[in-house]
Image 1 (spheres, one colour):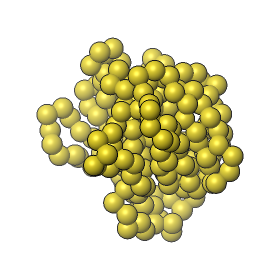
Image 2 (cartoon, one colour):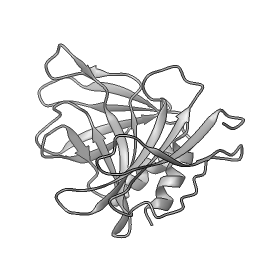
Image 3 (tube, rainbow, N blue to C red):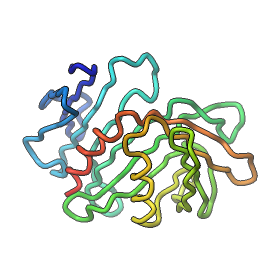
Image 4 (cartoon, helix red, strand yellow):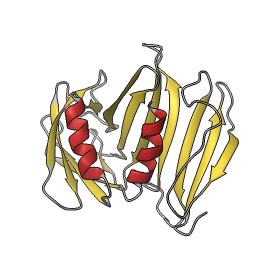
Length: 208
């Protein structure tokens, strides 16, 4: 733990193993860094970087996690930096709530370009849809995103859009996402991105 109560834990997970082995723990008052003894994208080992904010008492939105996995369809290794939302949104049933997950992905060693991925954990649309990103209560940035096969995930369609968003997220504290599920009113959900810049630096290095 550092002066800012930030702890970084680097763990290794093998397929079929339910427990993690701690590879390294590192914290620095000058910023968050993680030093890997092996490349992140080596398969079948899965590395997870958990940045745990010990000062938070909430069950969601406490940390950014980073993991690497092999895509079953393409065979590519995917690195994924993600965070669960602070609050929830109504599920399509209207009787339950879900916590969306916002994250960024890349394919280390294959495609270092960074992609946005939002898993809403509920039906959103069956075709391209617009999502608004309101950073620190400012004017929203609207991006047209593609929709995954199960209609619950929205994904970036261009690197230029991702760069615009990353510019706004840098050094910000919060971002509110807005989306209008098909034939429903807009829903809003908040993310705590106060540690995003530090976490993203580690993630970006793993994409190369």
